Amino acid sequence: MAKKNELYPKDTPQVIRDFLNYLSSVRGRSDATIKEYFLDLRTFFRFIKQYKGIVQDDVKFSNISINDIDIDFIRSITLSDMYEFMIFVKNERPTYHKSNNTTYGNNSSTRSRKTASIRSFYKYLVSRNLIETNI
Image (cartoon, rainbow, N blue to C red; front, side, top):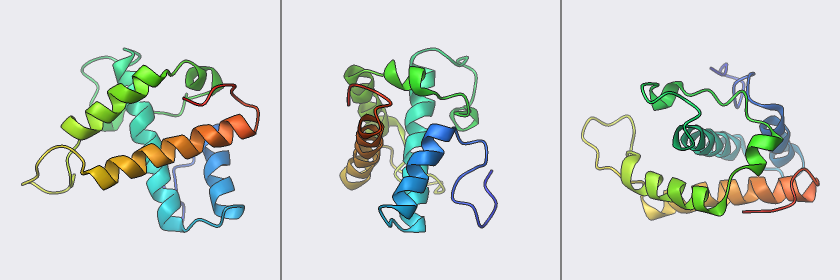
């Protein structure tokens, strides 16, 4: 996991690191925003790997590594996959993950932020000519 002074783990894929560094250095986003974007992208890629059957069913969601995410994997993600992710976030993710008494399903503002994080990431990739299509 990341050290206290790091915004994301060292084994974060380079393409995600570049995006987060861009947000920090060029776009001037706060450290808190960078951390949330990382968490949103990590959740998204963990879900996609699980949904596409890339990880075994018995692997705990929080143990799914994203360190192997690359441009080819990102290109394989479809709009339908994104919709599946949003349903997952709405129905299966806790509103507050550290609470023992939580209702499931992120609230609408959290889902909107997750969507904005992913949208911003894909927009960045298209602007850098790393992918052709923004889902």
